[in-house]
Length: 289
Image 1 (tube, rainbow, N blue to C red):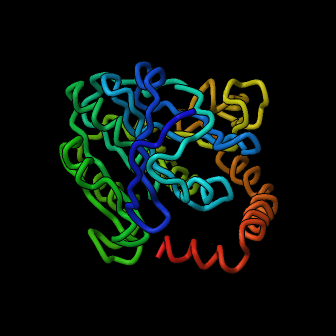
Image 2 (cartoon, helix red, strand yellow; image 1 turned 135 degrees about the vertical axis):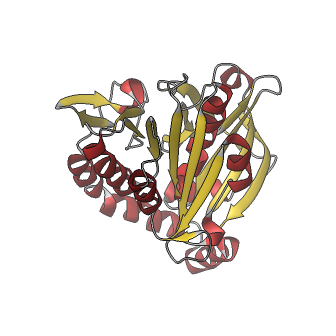
Image 3 (cartoon, rainbow, N blue to C red; image 1 turned 90 degrees about the vertical axis):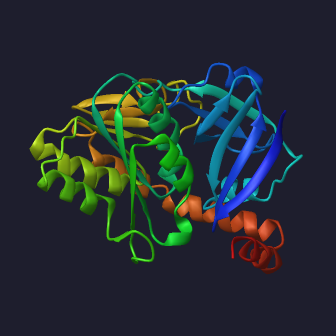
């Protein structure tokens, strides 16, 4: 059992959790993730570790309430317990002196790039972070990213904050100005990571993306998280989660994930119905604003 030490509601549908997990906190590195199971009947879902404190024995991660399990977790509060947390899993992000590194976080992906930004800065790199969100209220961790980066730029779809447009618009301007870029790391929605990889490919800018497909066991045995990279099948949980963005078959992965949309919607609707129907939906709506 893992106790929730603190919970914060940061933005609509986005929550930060601080958990007591000393054994995992001692070993966790930037870029790694855990798999959680809320209770005996719960599904296993992967969550990126956004921060770890080996001295305090704590993990920090962020949850976006969009599906059945994340909706369930969004209703847990400080003092509640999570049944299982397995990790750290996956390969840590390579940390070395690369030069100028552009880190791109799209929406919820900002939480995943934060520990990488901090580690790369400590290694002596110049870190330019580009944060993207639909609206100003959905921009998370800006203060933390300012501390961890050399500079931070923000793009919002509606122009309510920062530059109106996409993260790729800012990256395109940097490339056109011939600003030095030695490495790009993009984490966020698949379509965003694909767009970043497509943009940097003609310029031969080393680009890495973090894959977060459906996972079950997190050990490479189930094969659910398979990704085609450079014409070879890889497992995101043990071979990744970071891969060469120019070698990932994004089209195949996007099509695979679309296949589960009806089941995901059905599970969510069943959960809402079983836990109170319209009354519960209204309660969740109030929580999210």
